[in-house]
Length: 97
Ligand SMILES: NC(=O)c1ccc[n+]([C@@H]2O[C@H](COP(=O)([O-])OP(=O)(O)OC[C@H]3O[C@@H](n4cnc5c(N)ncnc54)[C@H](OP(=O)(O)O)[C@@H]3O)[C@@H](O)[C@H]2O)c1
Image (tube, rainbow, N blue to C red):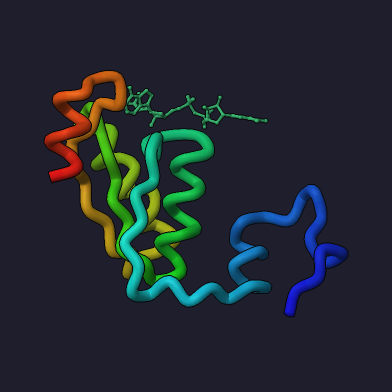
């Protein structure tokens, strides 16, 4: 069991996974905003747990770049790119189906 005392302000996502060893192998996780910033790092870390990660995108080229980036550190990453614009309800409905 990991105590709060072991988690510092600068504990990285990779270190958290190492400590907590979450069993996410059968899970499917949608990470919004995965093409840059916090979303990209979140998708990369969760991909390392063995979960299947849905990579929503508005621009396919950006999704390809994100997938390439994640696979550099997680070669076995299970990633699926799917079109989604969160500002468009038609796009959200289509994504959900
Ligand atoms: N509480 C805090 O201390 C704190 C600190 C930092 C960030 N944040 C919050 O965390 C979130 C992420 O921040 P960030 O800097 O990593 O990135 P960000 O620039 O806010 O988000 C970038 C990602 O969001 C996607 N995105 C933006 N609008 C979208 C839409 N309409 N539909 C689908 N995807 C959309 C972008 O896709 P495209 O590539 O297609 O543009 C990109 O993948 C933000 O909400 C930010 O405000 C909070």
